[in-house]
Length: 196
Length: 245
Image (tube, rainbow over all chains, first blue to last red; front, side, top):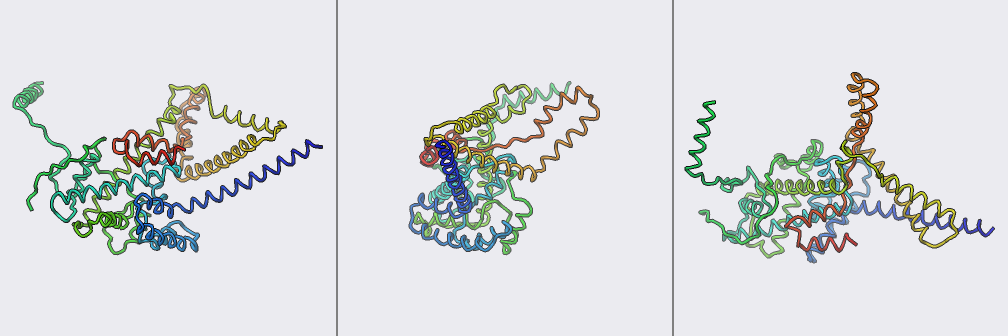
């Protein structure tokens, strides 16, 4: 009889755990709902600016009102949320990031932590680019950031070449000086090939 | 103004050359959506990134550094186009590198390699041990919290597995992966005999089942450790504190 009683207690405790898991699942779904609001709030501690925190207040309420009544397609909800929170919308939302990763490789899936860290890398990229380009503009004794400043920064820091934008003076490949002896060797090789 | 040569003491670049071409662009549906959103300027190309928010972010950074009065942006459209192209190229580079690390960590390509034979299937062994633990819990008189926590964790893991399976099924339906085995079986079954069909059964099964790559936080951290830009950065240290707990 005591064994049966203990079994019942264990089942009851198991049910409690099940309920707890259900709560955690619902909280997880809530967290899934929150990511577009979470990313600007996570960004604010890095900037350490009260203005940014006050600005972040707006998009949170806007996103809340935007997503509440709409329960249909994701496109319409995204449109409404972007329209409502146009003041401080993120550069890249998590669904868009997932879509981008699918474009690169269709069989890849991301965790939430991975998404957050990738978004941080993007923010760092933008911030670093803005600082460097403004420094280059100051160095040129100019008060305008031009395309060549951006080009120079990407070339020097990220080894990245932007073709078709701005000036063509900066080129990715530089021709090495060809010596006269090398030219003669090439000419000899061409003659030899023509003979065969 | 005449162009003066620059000698700026900045960090030398590191990494492979990234020439911006073959940009990752959204589908036509999203392009139409983006066109609908931005009806004023129809010539803007579609992008995964929000154009206006990038511009606002740039102006915000300039204003934070008290440079808004001094520094302006000329050729706004051109500048934003180049910036977007660079951002997409860099993001593509980061994602590709991280995927390569994920493949290496999970030995992704070895599963389809005919030269390799799986001797110890750890997944099956672990599932068997988990079931054995649950059975021991049922027949044990010990009422400590260890077994309850373990059981709860197992139940949670089962739910996660079920969720992942549903996600996988949805992805398979989206990419129409189920049509491939039929297409592969039809031309091979006609010319081959019974023995050849039996021999070719195993690789067909392998090819028919695409494996998904579950990118982990360790892959991104590994990428940051190997990259010279982030190897000694505060972002990496903060990531250690936050995610490696």
